[in-house]
Image (cartoon, rainbow, N blue to C red; front, side, top):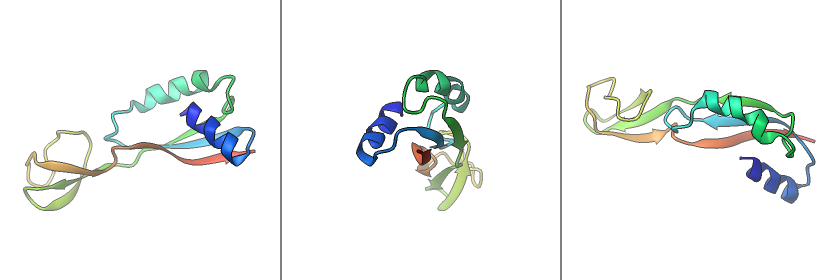
Length: 104
């Protein structure tokens, strides 16, 4: 993520990142608390040194092939909350991305 921020700083001409809004979906496999814990250490001496990290956690959404409904799910391989089936195809909530930046 820091490398991505530095590449964008070079191409867009900003000098410092003040705030990072990071979207981490419930089904992304990324441990949110570990990201919070490590961010300051990883950002030290970079363009994001001292930046504030804001994390947005969108829910996991899947399409159930059994009941033909779009449902919210908390973890991969959980059963469908509507019918109990296990044929779920993830639709969203499985990505991690930089949503927004506050820069100077």
